[in-house]
Length: 286
Image 1 (tube, rainbow, N blue to C red):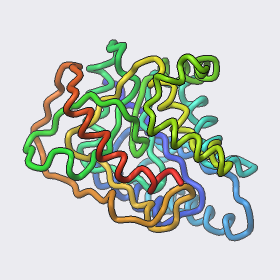
Image 2: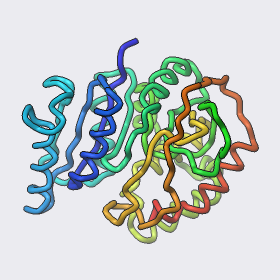
Image 3: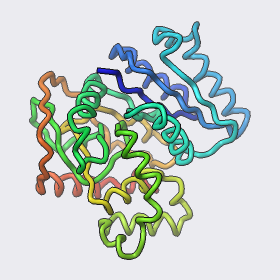
C-alpha cells in the first residue's frame, strides 16, 4: 500500500516542532513529509524559523529522514494558522488522494500512522465518513485493552486524516451550504461558540470550525480511536488559539491489538464525546 503523506504546519516553535519530528523518527516513519512554514512577523520569528529549518537539513538533527522525504513550503508573508492550513491542504490535495495532518504541537504516538493508513483504505468508500481523528479524551474509555474504531459526530483537529475528494468538496461547497435553513443542523453549543467568536472578531482564526460546520450540515461523521493516538503539547501558553490547561492531557497506551469495526452509529458514544467536549471546549476556542 502506498504510504500516505504527512503534512505538518509550523510557525515559530522549534522546540515543539522537534518533539513532533523526534516522535516520527522514533516510530520509523517512511512517509513523505510536507512541512508548511508560515511567514515570519518579525526578526525573532526569523531566528526561530532558522532553527526549525536547520534541524531538517542534511547536517541537521533529522537528516535520517532522507533528502527527498521532507519537502518544505514557506509562506513569504504571515497568513495566520487558518489561512496557512487551507492553502497548504489545497496544494497537497491536488497531488495526493489522501493525507495525514499534524500541527507543530501534536505529537503522534506509535499507532497513529498505522491506524490512519489502515482506516484510509478501509473506509474509503464510506459516504458517511468525512475524516479520521487521532485525539481521544482520557475518560472516554478507561479500561479498553484493544484499539478500535468509533464513529463520532464532533471533529477534533489534533492529528487527523482525510481523502482529498472530501477536502475538495468542503472547499468548493462549504460557503453555499451555510444558510438559515441549514444552520439548524449545527448543534446549539457550536452555534453559540461561533456567535461568541464572531463577537470577538476571532472567527476567521479557526479553519476547523468551518470544516466541522460543513460536515454537520451534510450529516457526515468521523472515525476516532477509542484511545488517543496523539498528545497535544500546545496548551502551555505557546499556542495561537488555546489557553493554558492540563485538562486535555492524555497518555499513550501500549495497545497492540487493533479492530477496524463497521461504520455503525452508537448514540451512547456520541453523547459521551459531546459531554467531554463541552467541558473543555473553552480551552481551545477562545
